Length: 116
Image (cartoon, rainbow, N blue to C red; front, side, top):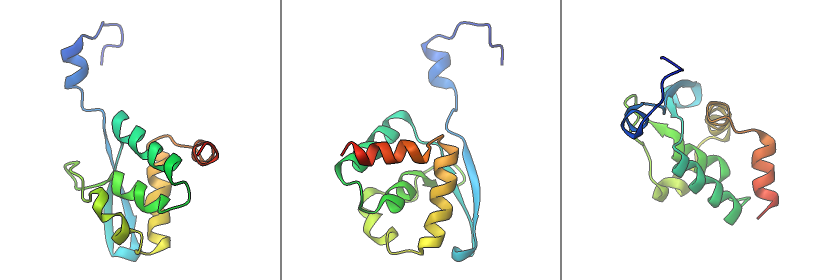
């Protein structure tokens, strides 16, 4: 990509900038895909942490980022209670991959919880 060219609206909106990461989850018997969140999705997830900092944090992030190999979401917010009942170890794997892939630090998450 030519980094010196000026981008216009069309060029920016045409870029596929939400890459997926394959993550092996042995507890579930296979691989899942973790998607980079859009800015709006990240804002919504962060707002949910501020609103309820100690409830289903891993499940909420998993629901926000788990997708099929084409990037289509696997779950909706209605699935959070069911996902929260899945293996903590499996959700820890997804959470670790999602926070790394989305450039979220533990300090970022702790700050969100503190500000709630």
